[in-house]
Image (cartoon, rainbow, N blue to C red; front, side, top):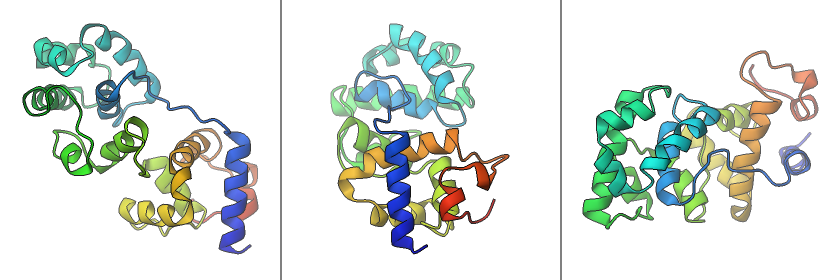
Amino acid sequence: MTKKDRIAFITQKLDELFPDPPIPLNFKDPFTLLVAVALSAQCTDARVNLVTAELFKVADTPAKMVALGIEKIAEYIRTCGLYQNKSKNIYKLSQILVEKYGGEVPRTFEELEALPGVGHKTASVMMIHAFKTPAFPVDTHIHRLAARWGLSDGSSVERTEADLKKVFPKEDWERKHLQIILFGRTYCKAMGHKKEECPICSVVGCKGK
């Protein structure tokens, strides 16, 4: 199967299985999305949604988050991994948003990545989901599947992002980002993966584990 045929099949299968992929984190605006994504590192989306359901009742704006304080933030997010560092980062980025941006979340990669605890992946999620600016966030699922399907060599997350941006049309980056995550969680997991049972790997082949 040529790479072009593989891409066509992968696209068709993802659209068939996940025609309207949801954003897995609950949020109502750019700030609450930013906090949710910051919490999602080494924590399941389901756990993040449980935590933010309570946290956002008392602090759903940067000003309210600053008023809540680091220790109280930590109490709300204690069940998330790395909660101590995350509470400090959420407090500090909220403080910057209030003092520098009038309580608004900035809309450029450079400004987002300068915020405490915000890396390129988080900035990409913000750009594509909050601001509808083309980006292709790469998480562990996407990085793994891109290598398995031969869409990238798996050498780095940066390489995977660049390769996938070439593979899929820009107008489809948001859908494909969500579809591949859902596919990885449902059919193509890191552990116990069985190529013959995977709707895509069983057809296009599978590189690595």
